[in-house]
Length: 152
Image (cartoon, rainbow, N blue to C red; front, side, top):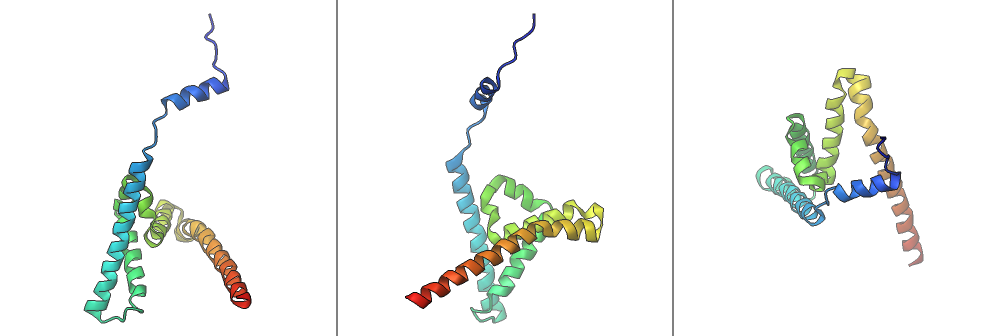
């Protein structure tokens, strides 16, 4: 006797019934706290550059961003950032550190294909789209800003 095959809808209902429920509130709180802590670290680094190295507050942002990028790439290379990101979720996607992590991860993943086609080619696949959307967004906002200033 053949076992009847469930229809597609029945299977989807059965799968949905046994699928674990996402812990949305817990994940949101984790992301909020971790993202906030990364931002606090950035503020601490910026204050360090101002106090210890004599940077003016308006100029301390550049070395702060460079330091956060360096730390993110270093921790990605050591395998720490990705494990932390799996636990913390979206909180590690804070723009500078998350972007640096994604580029460094792509470079590490494709290093066996060579420096140019592997590391260089794959590392900037993600960066290219981010840069394009960033430039287009800046252009659109610039036009909106210009129009508002012209008519207001």
